[in-house]
Amino acid sequence: MIQKDEIRSASEVRNHWAEILDEVERGAMVTITRREHGPATIIDRRRLLALLERQEELEELVEVYEMLSDPEVKEVLEAAEAQIERGEG
Image (cartoon, rainbow, N blue to C red; front, side):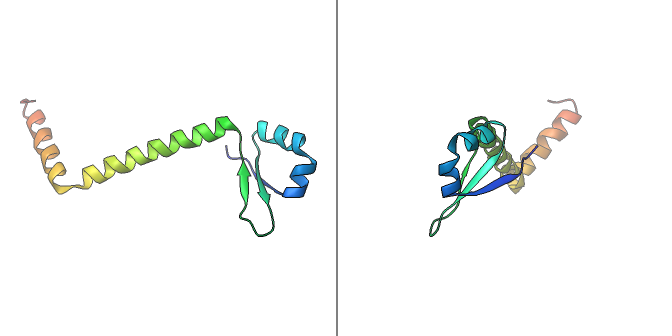
């Protein structure tokens, strides 16, 4: 379940650092905004690792999709399936 992103100013985070970290430990994502800078988000390490794992899985799926989209690979797979169906596999 994705939790709501808490948006906080850098000064608020600085003034309430311990409380902000407690929120992050409980699963909140906290985005920090600063003038003239892009936002930065703090997330729990477990969530980060889970996101990285999902990203790897997605990249692997994309590779498989691209491979299966190759006409030559598709032809070889179809031939192999036909052999199996004929009991030759």
